[in-house]
Length: 555
Image (cartoon, rainbow, N blue to C red; front, side, top):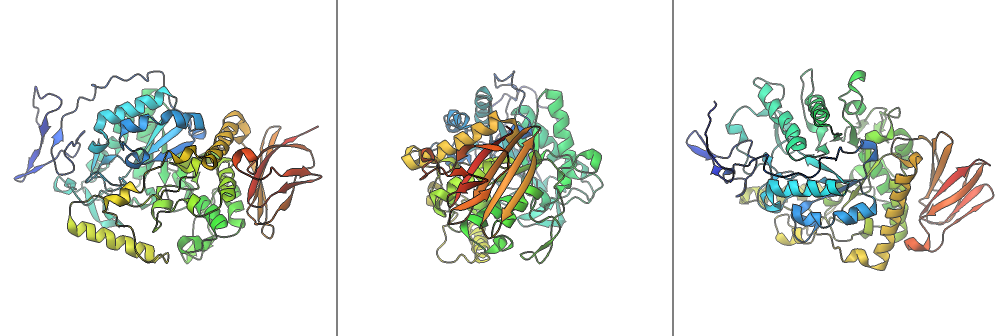
């Protein structure tokens, strides 16, 4: 059905009358009163952009900083986030990634319960606030990526199924019904999602999309929705004269998502790689519960460096089956890796960040592992200064039965990891408040020292082409008994070797026969360490839990 109403000004509220019920517009641009309230008319040409010279960044040049708008600052809005952009550029960040902002129930939520895919969250300052944030980011040369959820909608305020056959009972997800992408009347369902992806990069000038749980999107048609979204976004970006990255979160270790269309892939720009996180986390914490049972020691870290995936077709004890497929032929800039992110921190019972689990020396070591890797790095807000406030799971639902179901689901999830006892209440406001980043902590001496290490590592990545994501050929050597790994990266005549000692004792790590020069050590006193290590004949002396970077120089 179609109708035209003239002379309806921006700011007008409206509903659709559907079978006698008032329902919000499924493509609302603004929902000022929440998921049950009316839609509001927005003039998409009303904002005055100042970023006409901005053309985006190549995926290989991204240093991503993931943040949750509500807990990133005390203000918890898009406008409040603007105040911290200068700190991020000084650190060396090139892109911020916003956790989902599509309208969700209440004011406290991770964003994965969104139900109005076209409406930026009202309590974050709505569509104009998002425009102001993106425009301000571009002014300081920061790209802005958005986490979008195309695998399901949240349960509260989800009226979309009343408008048509949007959901499929044939393809359930862990979070509710999946989309009807391949059944009768699915063409317009697909269009709804593809148009949404175009919408974000067009009306809000976004520089990329992160597709949440892309491997959980079931589409049995010949043209997978992921390929269609990627193609549509890239075509729109070309028309706009900008570079836009489409990055998939996937736990399937399937390189088909990022292989070129010409090679039978979906043509996405990059994917999150959980194996890297799990390998490093298990090596430095010693944890073996849940999926960490598949990891431990330094051999998985070496595989993560050299093979892209740790599991690329061999048996996974945790899954009790073979898992993944090879991807070592793909360049490093197709993979996004991290030490922490919202899932890996927030899905712990206590929401503990890495700084609450390991020593300062270990924090410095893994910072080097991340930022000297051949991949696109992602930092989680506050990581750079060793934030110790937890990041917990929080909601503010209005349905008592849904609140009870969320509490029970979290209890069952934590039991699989052996976490028991009193758990933070997701519905409690105190859980949300406890998750804010403490920016005063960042100025304390030990925290500022860690931040200097992040800043210097990022400066090296920026200034040395060989350390750019995907720019080099890699050679990996490891010694399980000595608990060390070396990663040598070569571009033309330039060669760098990074050495990582995960052990509790000093190690002599063999090096190249050429001349070499120590460029950085995680144990330098400027970074809070006790000494810098040294080069000895034919080897590098690495203190316990430390890393060093050397430049190989041919005499």
